[in-house]
Length: 354
Length: 81
Image (cartoon, rainbow over the protein chains, first blue to last red):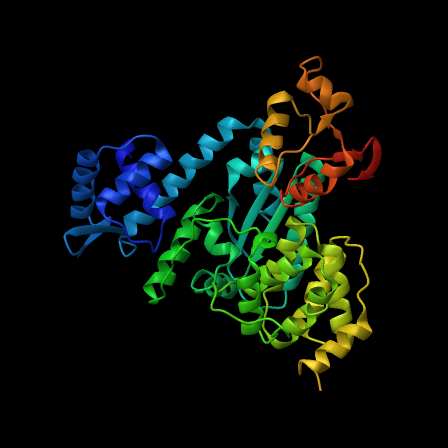
């Protein structure tokens, strides 16, 4: 693959769902790769368009390039790009080379793993950590929970062996689809604009192609939300969306943010009033516990989360909640006990229990 | 993990992004020696800082997910990990 093709496809794959002209693409390539000439990009796009790799749609006087996922060849090219990104990253770190080699060997026996990506790898490397996005083939099945526990156990072993913090986000096929196509701000949509799929990139891109072929829309986000920095306005707006309207606060339209980020934000600010409201949100809404556990490990609030989940399980047993407790306990989390009486009163007040 | 001076500086640059104001952070022990290039690397990352800067540093560190073992002291007394 020539350099210009690499830069075009690399940039477009990081910006799935975002529309921009060839001029806009040239600017983005310049930002991401350090150099780009409009004429070269324009000519190469014409060639890629002729080969069916890229489609061009007209919007006013601009031509908008996008990846043509119905072209089988494109998936190979995207897999090639992942391999090149991986090589470039590994050149920077011998330790990471050993870690990824070991990870591939140890995860190999987990049959449900479809692909593994390292997200935001450059920044995380500076912080002695790696975020892993582990996608599973299946969504249900008797062995699924067992396999998720096994993945966590392997990850813990790798962490101890390589002296690096590993935070895995393990997503089933259904959960991946739900988060990817959601209109809310969530970690998955943010992660995918900066990741390297080091295990089975072809599998990863085939899943993306299949999602688009089913008519779903994907729009990646180029941001990295820190839950503790979610504004008060957005927090109150989303709390109201999830059935917890705070008394004394006016609700204004804000950005739609996933429930897991909202819960993380409440746990990180450490205000007792807000923390006690978390079981209300969990009882009234469907949260992704895998994502919640990932955020709790990343921002180190697992102990408090476990206390809340245990209190909730005694007040209102939920099967997903029990799974979450099981995983946190298997991870060796030490519980910070929650005030069950106060939580129960609050849940009653907000009609989360009768 | 052994950290050399450039890795330490890269880590501090990431924490710095989360600070809302300038603070004083004093590297101690092996961390200081590594930053001064007297020692090649360090495993532990140790700091002391004035009381008025403690909360700001703690908050910034909490907002920077990392995999280092960081110990820090308020006015020379150990309070956090």
